[in-house]
Image 1 (cartoon, rainbow, N blue to C red):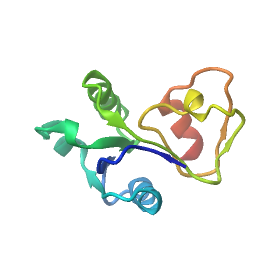
Image 2: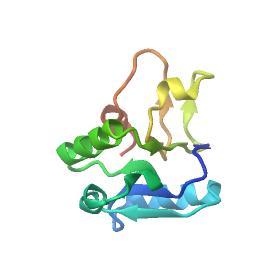
Image 3: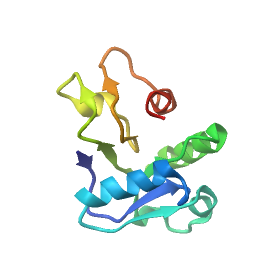
Image 4: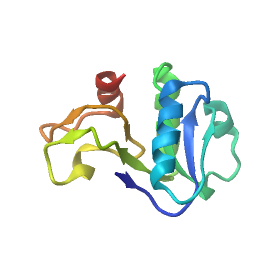
Length: 126
């Protein structure tokens, strides 16, 4: 399931990363527009960030990841939510569990017990 608007989707990550490649592949199956990858440094230096909607598709450098997420939030940029068909979510309100810019690509169980940060959830699917 992809929750997105009609803008092109920019995945902030690394083209050689399996996580980024999987995200690009699966999201491309559901989005009629373009889906492309920018490395974090390219995103930081991008002049017009309002032209795209974003997903953060890397996890190894947590400080850089948090910096990117803070930039996206601080500039109130459009974000996607993507949940693969194999994800089991035990709440009818998926948006309450899955935050802006979140990508769930592999089997993971989502509960509406407490609000979990994206970085905590990524540990379950990596």
